Image (cartoon, rainbow, N blue to C red):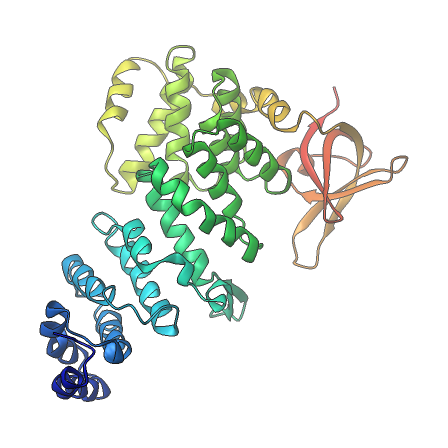
Length: 395
């Protein structure tokens, strides 16, 4: 049977019209069910692929809360048999639904495989543009583009299934995101990790070091520690991350990684990390993996350290030298605290002789400083902005 023949188009037209009218009445389930026999028979002519695609989209969109994973995968599989809808607004809308549903059904929805069939080169230029909006209190906010959301979902799945085949195939897509979405602060991290999964550890380390010059967040220090092979440097990198850590709920993997490195050399500190890890997981009702209990058994009878924060501070020198060895240390004088246009307090650090003027967030060390105190600072300039990468008191 030629599904694109005029005879077949006329034969199937009444069902297409029926589904269309049900959709206009917002009877999205009924509209979809009318077409299911045709989807299963794969007899939708290319002439009707777009209206049928919209029927599938509205069925998914309006039933997000009640569809099973199997229902979702079945509907998306029907859509992917259509060849004439990409790229298009419909094709992008289907991807939006897939990305949302992948988040809900992440344990049994193979998003990588879906993207391979959907074909990421089908993204439109509009799909790389972020959208601006506002919060309830009127604060301006920028929402990620569809392409960025897809990259985030893919990266999350790659963390679980980073085969060389997947990584090599998806690398060009991540490179495109970096080019077209330069404000995305995570994409460089994704690319660094892709290099590591490819087996190019040296390039991964170089990428993470580059990120740390402009975005020295705790999780970048943690990721650099994950890919570094030197045990002592890894410990130092994790300690550096701990001195900058965010919310306790986010750092479970960091605590566990540090505990595993210290279990033979500093049992007290390792016991502290395991204790904090288990406390957070129990408070949040999260499952604790069996290997955590095995680690805890190795530390049975050990009193957790009461000087954890001091341990972190005492062990950051190797990390800073590893990341910033080519950036010279300058002597800068504390000249006071100012409030920026956003209402946040910043410390002023200056070296008039070298014409270095830096404003940096108020870390505990600077909150206690007096005007005239001198600090050892690594200063990096990026796009005419000077960043204080490391700050230590003079001895």
